[in-house]
Image 1: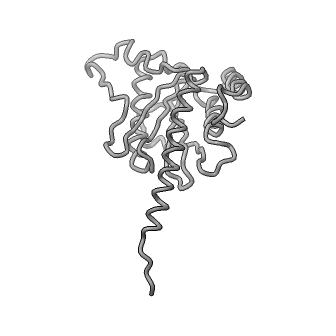
Image 2: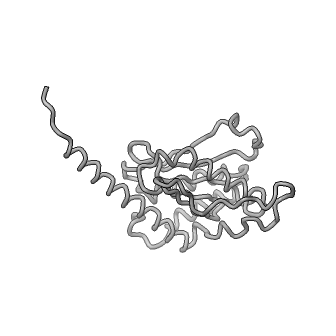
Image 3: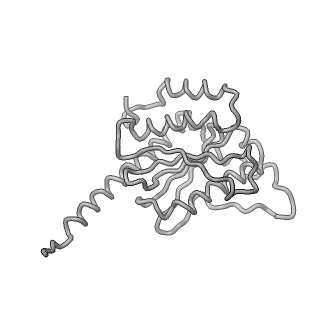
Length: 212
């Protein structure tokens, strides 16, 4: 059954996550395939209105990131290759360390810096995933505001408190709550895309016809 009418995650998808979680691959590599499958399922495997594409960043732009901190993220594009959703994927261990939670939040905001202006919809949604722990972001295309608001480190002269951003990734995406949140996000994106198509069609019809 399609995501639009399903009421919970399919057993087959949950099995994919369970199997890949047990693999001994390093860091977030084991989650790329499962999340690609999840997003493809959400936006319709037979649809040509959206597609999911893995993104890789040259480490020359992030010289302070160790190789083990590889930046892995997926983007859902519309048919014109404009971003409508960002999903940044990290391994489960990131949720237990304050410095890694801070880094995950910073990297998510960097994605918004580079992509928000290209989004064709009123909102660009973002998923920060530490394993299956989810924090949802939403960028306003008009104002440039990003929710949740950025939380500064208390002081640059001391290490981060161990509880910094603790609890911010408070949704298990594979839970029923996670399913409902993804329903909300996907419905907003698809609804916005349909409305944008109507506006684009109206704009074309209103253009004056010129004769040479």
